[in-house]
Length: 324
Ligand SMILES: Nc1ncnc2c1ncn2[C@@H]1O[C@H](COP(=O)(O)OP(=O)(O)OP(=O)(O)O)[C@@H](O)[C@H]1O
Ligand SMILES: Cc1ncc(C[n+]2csc(CCOP(=O)(O)O)c2C)c(N)n1
Ligand SMILES: [Mg+2]
Ligand SMILES: [Mg+2]
Ligand SMILES: [Mg+2]
Image 1 (cartoon, rainbow, N blue to C red):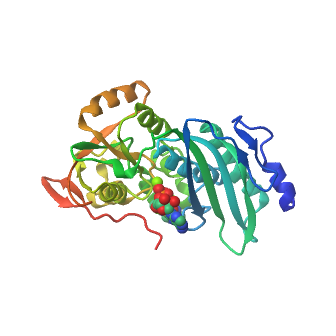
Image 2: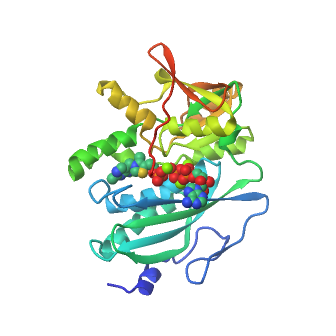
Image 3: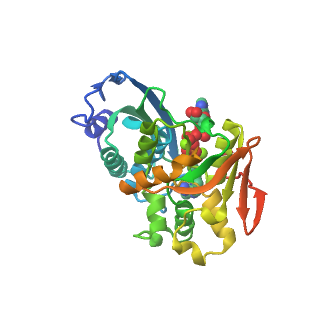
């Protein structure tokens, strides 16, 4: 067992991917040199044992991988390119071995490699119970190109960059069967190894178009409401247009609705863009192997979300995951 400081040295990267890191791990704070012409984008999100994961719902490596990926997803939702991350980890005095924490870091390192980011610092503390991992990420976006929730306008179309409901479906299976559910099943994979849609975010930012964007961490209904409210418009969604896997076909409708609309942790991006842009953007994204689905439109309103389902349109309950 290494002591705190030996352990920190053992997880510190020996070199950085980004030349802009002036000082990483090993001093009172990290120092980076921002590139001229870019705005810096910052986000922080925490995963808590018992709330976001348990040892039965997530492999150790996946806990680390997901802790970084969910943060990268927030950078993607701003149109930013991921650059660096910092980690604060509170380790319970019992039930967690150093080897297990190392595995979590391995998973985080894998995500770091995937998104081309450097670990530049963090904090290590003990706690009485339940592991807590906080990851702070820094990215950059070309000046004034950031993609905001507040940019939706009447006559825009509403889009999703990928399917939703899969992570929630996987979680239900994991809560029921525990480790027996682990495997290649796409729902389990979606829950344990989420993919942040960085390429979509960058494509939208680089286009220079006005695009409102949010990542689906708390469920489509909730995220749509956030866009509607901050833009001062109404979003009209169409149930039939929601991208979903054929695997959902045999699932009862109430469950489908719960997973697809209120599930969360999907990390697809939900957004709006000018209607005339949609087909060309879809084609360009397809060339990169990326998808885009129109699921509704924006109309004048006061921040409400409507859902057309089985011929009638109703106000969509905006419930999603909430911590309080
Ligand atoms: N405790 C807090 N103190 C200060 N600002 C906060 C706090 N919690 C959230 N915020 C800010 O509120 C805004 C919304 O945060 P929120 O966490 O809901 O968004 P998100 O990270 O996209 O969603 P999620 O955490 O569900 O993935 C962000 O600007 C965030 O920085
Ligand atoms: C064991 C276990 N129970 C429940 C859930 C579901 N869950 C937890 S937080 C969250 C929303 C996103 O989090 P945040 O708002 O903090 O970004 C969801 C859908 C889970 N992942 N693991
Ligand atoms: Mg957050
Ligand atoms: Mg978000
Ligand atoms: Mg949330």
